[in-house]
Length: 166
Image (cartoon, rainbow, N blue to C red):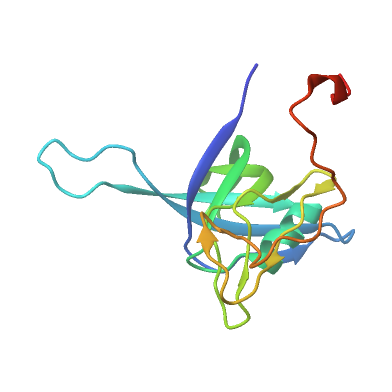
């Protein structure tokens, strides 16, 4: 069976980080996700509000680097959870269990620090999260290029194919 979901939207509130009795981190947050299509009468597109849960290091990452209004891309699985509320009524909810969370935008602050839009923290691997660039550097899609290229240890090859290593 296949249960995989990818959503992109803005956080509706700051993530809430809690810990289980055994100390495992779990972050809860909600994304506002615009639908790809609008109504037939040409009005505004509707928005879905989707609850997400991130466990362990992914939850800690979300709690540390994401705030209300930030764009996030969440990859994970859809889970339906049932419970009985305080009045004895049976309730159900759908939520996304996040395996990976990516930055969907770039963050600008007074230090000219920007987050690269493709970095992730999920599973056991960490792809880095910020790139510090000089204030005057141009910005290209969430990545700030350095003002000057660092010195390179690579030598230029002539157009002679005999020098190619393959």
